[in-house]
Length: 214
Image 1: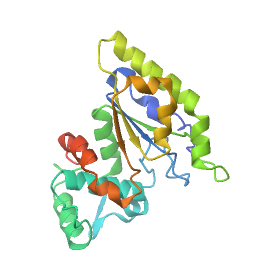
Image 2 (image 1 turned 45 degrees about the vertical axis):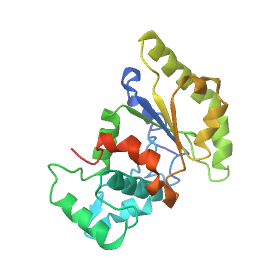
Image 3 (image 1 turned 120 degrees about the horizontal axis):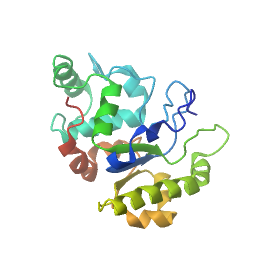
């Protein structure tokens, strides 16, 4: 689980800045990787290597597939070819343009934050002896409070509530919450599935954000 006081790290995003609530499953099982922010693996520094994505990114399967989906959405990769020489070429272009292309995972997180993402997990803890879906169910009352507060804040400010972006079956458990009905939604398979790379809905959603650019 996230250590070092990082359990609620995602809530550094000010409420008025939240435009999207991205919900994953749970923290990475490795302490160094669990940052309290979904999909942001604390063990990852550089995004790129000579062979494509860095070894640390490739180890974090969900992050790897998310990166490849962004590259497809940006027109830098073909969904039919997201490995081998195609990735080497993308990486080479990125590494020679650090003034235009982000180089590290903290830069990607900063871009997501700037776009207004609240990066939550359905469960804020990982316990090896408990199924993630069971832990996530226990956190539903907490998430009901979070979502209600976000919807109430938007209503007071005369704004549309943030868009819920739910990745995977565990995140979709939020459908059981009364507050869920107050939000526009985007739903996709979890990014640890290879099919996520070719998810057209996710490509269309993220393409205008240009998250890989500075």
